[in-house]
Length: 282
Image 1 (cartoon, rainbow, N blue to C red):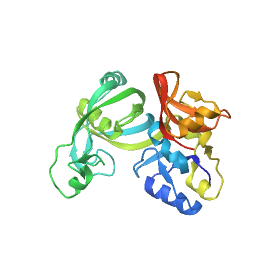
Image 2: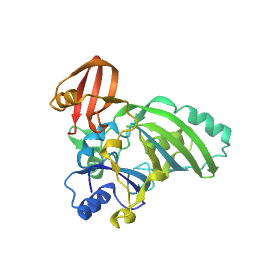
Image 3: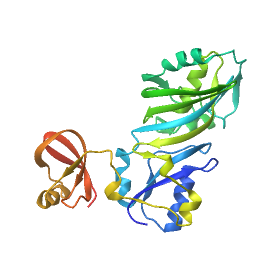
């Protein structure tokens, strides 16, 4: 298996770490990682980066799309189906109009309390480690960006929504907070990830297909199609690969830097009068 991106359709019940380990062992890979974990209870798109593509991790997955089902009337300590029930309330009679009005309150930049069971660190310790030890801690509140929440269906007590979020937002926390706004609490009952920018679930392969060799790897040259390209001459490409800033007009932003043949040689940041190497792949 060469350098590139592998799209996996992860099933429920397996950890993202386990998926990575099975692929690593099968193909004897030295460098492998993923562009954002999926909890064991979740299914859907897991983006695996192999070889030099692991250096592109920061430039993949700025936006993500999920289809999530909330179970209203039941709150858990993890904010999802895997946690212990901590509160139950009667679910009121809700109509679509009322639900949509609440959803609008969560669009744009919002403040979100990080789930107690999460990998966020407090004084060097992950929140879930402290929670499992029974150590009281106040989860931090962060600003996150929610581009859209689309209503799909409501069959009491299950509410299904499509979320389009910027990296850093927790669907579990949205489920919890939407439930609170509706007056009965909620937890995330089911979750499927359908998009990790710039990749979609319909182009992914199951783990079984991958382990059987029935897959197509996205080559390194096509790993970041969402980034504008900056093509350099052979001499300038050599200079870029050796840490040199390249003069020219490059509006502020992140670029996929390519050699004259179109091969991806790195990632650069534009500074109007030049482009600076951020990651070098060659």
